[in-house]
Image 1 (cartoon, one colour):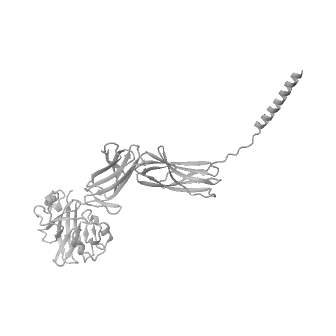
Image 2: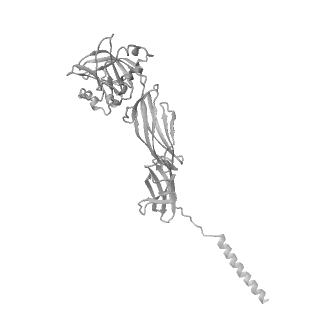
Length: 428
């Protein structure tokens, strides 16, 4: 009986303890979860909320990220992660009261970054040692730059270079990449916005082609439409990332012939003093466009009082500048000067009136024969008026390599005088 009572007492105590334990489990003390700092994207110089996209070698991008914490920020660190390697780029200066901080960092991509992508990690820690992160990824695109663009002597001026149908452009581009280059492409973008691939190159570099220089040559058709075109050079690496650059040209439409072109000498400003054989435009020495488009001008007309003669001259001829030295936009103030070569005493029988009146005449295609072997009578040509029956013909070759024939119709000598002529261009 005594044993049974003792056993019952033990059960009772155990039950009480169990009840107390159950009571504690049923009514736990509330646990408050304190959030860590938030780290969020603000802006990038290349707009993209998730990553910066393709970033060229040797270029940079600015990235701004914001850290916030109600408890105050303890640290805000920016790190760069390339593969398994991690580097600290910087740490924001903070004070105890900082609950929000914006950090802008310039992200460099250098040739040493051989990984296909790089991560920028922003790490914020608050006063409770809670941590927040934001990771920003950009991709390692190749670097490309046009280092030269020659268009048969028509040199670029400003952002838009003059180009004429039948002319030839040679574009040289340098490109390199942290990973292998698989293609360098040349595209033509026309006035209407259409883009076509002209040529694609696979770099001929032994072992891991990470750098190459490619030269492209393209001849513009004679019948090209006047307007703005672009040549785009693109490079692609073996991760599929691309970079491109372009050069813009103002296409000038050549004409087959012009009649009654008038130029006046240096003291006359009633009409043009200079002429472009590229597009048949005349310019006055008082016109700012004469300097702006000097890279298209081939003929300068002036009167030399000492010689008592009138001349057509190349813009590069010294007296072309001297005779217009009192004008604002004469050759002396041109940043670009084209060279023109002349041939005098052209055989009238060989290049007769048919050259100017018959579009099918092959005479104009034989003008180049006058310059065979580099022959020329120089950059200055006296202008004479002979007779309608026996016209005075002058052949020329402009800096773009195009030939033409000038027939003098009339001339009024003197510094206020003028010349009138017809001009026929060759087919090339």
